[in-house]
Image 1 (cartoon, helix red, strand yellow):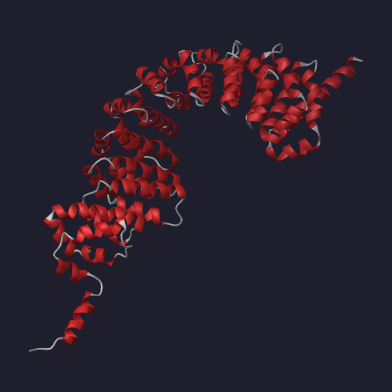
Image 2 (cartoon, helix red, strand yellow):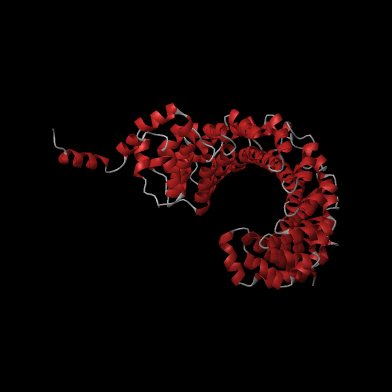
Length: 502
């Protein structure tokens, strides 16, 4: 009889082990699903042999991890309550496997995460954070992060279960894997609302995160800077608390970290801090943040550039002095490079926005932008039918705001030949302000062909554009204006034909 029990046990073990092994390879998933293994694994979660229970849970986790359809099947088979119930009483190996199943289900969607919450999964996972075993803590923190990342109500459920103080304690654990996942989960909780970020801050998380910014482990630093960014982004007071933890200027040095995602997350943190107020921008500028971000932009490509591009725009937006600091740090030529090099429209749009924030303050700021030959580039992108709506809108807004301050004739005149009427009125408007007060500019405007071009512009009577052109024409003797007007040569020829020598 004992031999029969042994063989039965061995067969069960072989079955769950085979399913777990097969489920590790994506090409086998459909076959397993069609064979109905989900309902076969369910009773084995309650097996008398612990190793069979654990392996059954591992197999279920691998299946659920593969697709949301299989994760939904786990929910429909009513497997979650069973797992949650067993989490409290089983050994550490089972707890790790069960936490893996909950994570695999929760990761796919808010609805599946809600199913985990509804069956008491979050409370059970929070209890696992108090376990002595590091592997159990890591698995539980990971699952809680996947639940929290979807939306604010799910994050709130994680907070309400008491997870945050325990996650902060996990930051103090010696195991690097636990530190990483705890920082990641705190970041996922903090990102949704100011209130959730405040909950993370109230448990003293900032001080512990700040102590890890110079840790040699790149993956940990990624998560630390991500969490600090997600806290800083919500409000002035939260950003100030991050600044008060004295992470700058040390964090600026991390813009030269070998790991590209550490660098990106540092740039993101700086963007989230500077966007709030001129004072917070000044703090970052004072510790060398501008030069460091501009160097960073020169050494990376693609989406890694986005936070740096936006950071420069946010700093410049606050005041003339801060925009001038961006100009003096050689920010404009670097943004020009980004505008030319990046093929993605959303990156070009962000760059155009930042250029507009720098150039719209004064004639001096506008001249710094025009000196980098950026107006023709912005105009070309605005007029390109292949540009996205957002890119066209950002280029148009940047062009208009810079043109309204631009008094530099060599930058304005080339636009007369290419700009559509809605941009042209701003170009001609600026010319009508510059030419009355500058005799050299008037002479240059005639010899370069600018005056002739203005006479060729077709305008509606009584329009603002006509008013601007009339103002320009009043700057020149009437015969010169007539000479450059279309059809004047025909008038002269006609007079010649009708001329009777005496």
